[in-house]
Length: 419
Image (tube, rainbow, N blue to C red; front, side):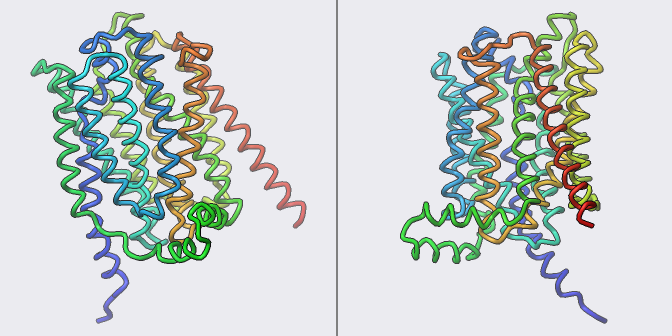
């Protein structure tokens, strides 16, 4: 009998990553997440303008700023230290949410939460350091599915505690605190990265400066236009998704006030997560020729998202349709991002994952911060009508779609002209 040693070896390192997936589940078990806006409005007694313009923007700004050191240091310090930082800053932010009251203190809490989000990039990227190029797509699905499974259970659990046990939103944060503490302990058992970055360390010594090495490795990390194209789309998509996902809770509150209806945020987020998880799993096993059909898929995805957002801005009186479009958007985003991350990783050299995905996250959150400053902050135009905000988000995705259609058509004409 012929033994398939490669499959056995692959199973061994795949089994080692179970600890990483368990960590991803525990650290993302956050029951208060669907109720964060209500928590700030009711338990902390902040006004709608204070939440939308003074508190939520701090999260965007801090994440974007703190991604800069993450980008510079991720490959040199490897990934596990940043994963530890993410859990420790999560503990600090949760403690501040529970035991502070003033606006400035909540802004500090948001800054620590932004630090946690910036450091979390290491969790998603570290999986490629353990894998094989043939399994990147499935590994991406697994590492992205673990947080979504946690989100699925925690959202329904949170809704149950709020609706049946009448637990306050503030008390839900104690579950968050427990999750972060357990995840911090679990960091000890995370699989080590190994010595695949030794080549980078040698380059640092030769160049006598880490900054020179960073930019030299970054130039090597973008070997072709294919990686650049998918990276650019990732940046714009991360920005659009961040905007919509963070400000969707005020939207539900707006609909409740307008129509006198009630939104079970935990149930809605649970249904959303089911669709997102389905999209992630399908993305991990989808077999398409992404290199040649990618432009069409990217363009159509952005186009559909644009029309759904624009349509949502016109039907705020119809809660069911808004919820339906919301979960479809979640499915599309997680499906494409799973495929996209794996496709980018396939064309990168070992030791460049942190640099490339760090740049993508940095620019994506930087663009998000710019949009928040423009539309939501007091220094911008202050779009207070959520119908107008959805309209702007829709036009944003429409612009992305048109841009990638132009790129695809240019590539197609160039290919057929020279043939």
